[in-house]
Length: 365
Image (tube, rainbow, N blue to C red; front, side, top):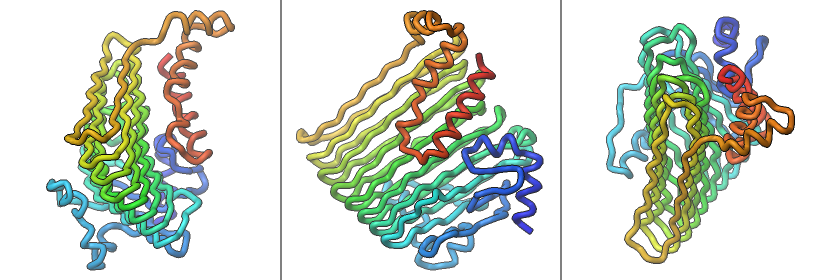
């Protein structure tokens, strides 16, 4: 019955849902978790050693319940508790999940406040890719999404988490997340927002609490007229030989963007880099880059690079000499600037994101 209901939703919202990076066709879907507003319609694992459950069912297990809020306690921060859904994903020890797990959080009702709490546990030496598509229908005007996520990467574990936002121009969004990475673990977080949205404010944190652990935050942001996007990331390097990287690429087509990044070294012998690059293509748009480096140790290597500007006339003229008109030249330069390859994604998802970029640029130029 749930599968049939998703098919009905697909018929009514096919264009919106396919912009989320999730593999949808008009006949079927490859989603492993699907929530509409506050109702979980589908939750299914496809592999032994992989658990995918709606959060309320998972929290009936006392072991899982111990993880609820555990990441925020490390940061000495509270978190909202009035949740209405979300997913629990656990990859058991030494399991490699070759096919990306796909989760979809869908806003349909007008004025609805969706509040979810997700927990992901990657056990020792396990490896997994997760794609979360957050989508709003045309009927979801004046809606709100609060997404709370906690990630726990155990010794030697690897998590590549990609979140794609495809909202409506009237939707406000507040993602709140923390990742705790143990010895030799690797956490890669990719954030993509290319379509209009009213407001997004997010500042995810990764805590590298084990030696030789790594974290990487990458974001691609395209901001449209009347949009406000305050997008940041923070990594706390608590142990020696930890590494971190924060890379942001932002294009303002008329919206306001704030790019934040904070690298905090709480141990010697750590290495981290922060890079913010932005293009402003409209007099109505703006970009504000705020890089932060912090430590009390002398034996660290922390660096940052920030650059904001416009498309060079020389680049435009060069491409026009090759037969492109001005709009085509601008589009080519932006596609090169918003380099999907920095995300380390599976090929099918890179192709899908490039298609989304192409369609948006066609509409904008």
